[in-house]
Length: 398
Image (cartoon, rainbow, N blue to C red; front, side):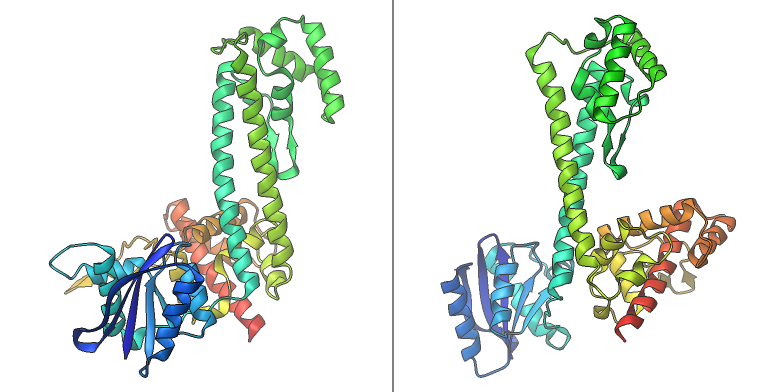
């Protein structure tokens, strides 16, 4: 019974090897994440006469080189949630923290929880690729929001109020606001023309870009330009550059988001559960691959409650003596991406009453009629939705 505790950091790790009763086989030592060092570690582990298990924390992407290499050698590796390890380490009175101390604590955790360690098993490559794409999708959506806020802030200085008259329609790939701002970029470029000249210019631009040429819209824009007060001087060389670059960056990020989503859709359609998930109310072409990617392989959950806990919308019981807590908040100890996607599905479901399969919709209305806040009712609906998801998708693989 040998526990190998590995404290992982970027590009290197600290390794400590221990046996029960505090017997140290090898004091903490450092290894690099190179083939040579990992090969030496794997050879040493496989040379032990007793059963040995490697224990390490999940540390984003840093632990993956160690994990993948050791799994290729068929070595038992347990990947521990950092929160669990933090709770375990907090029982010590002395709070010292170094890589060496951490590796000893991880090795001790492996010995104390030997029979509860689970050997890491990789998901199917398709699910792994979907998960990676989904994470990148969420990252780029976050960047897109920041780019949009930056663009709106610049427009408030060069073309205040223009966002109330012209808008982008991301879902159909139409960016009328961006195209218009790229053409005119400052109200001074509009007001230096007469109303008749601008309307003629606006109609010509609209036809060239493939938008509806509305003369009344042109008049409204011209009137707004005449009345508005701009705060960024158009004569400064940087003004045009800042506005046009903000548009370019926004469009590039949006293009990347759409490319990732298309790739996710292609991959998701290869899975057996795709059609079942796509037919569920509130789930469309965009949300279906995101939902599947956020959940992953349904077979790794032993029941529906495990899936709900993974989403972080479970409500752990709280009792003490005669007291029983009834107003519990969701734990939020789970996938934030899954909660976000699930909430979007509930919002989509609630927007239009489904003609068939309206169980979740009716449940949300029931909770609202009981006096629950709309957000609380949607989370309750998501709880029910995930139970149905688990049952239907699990049936596909049974």
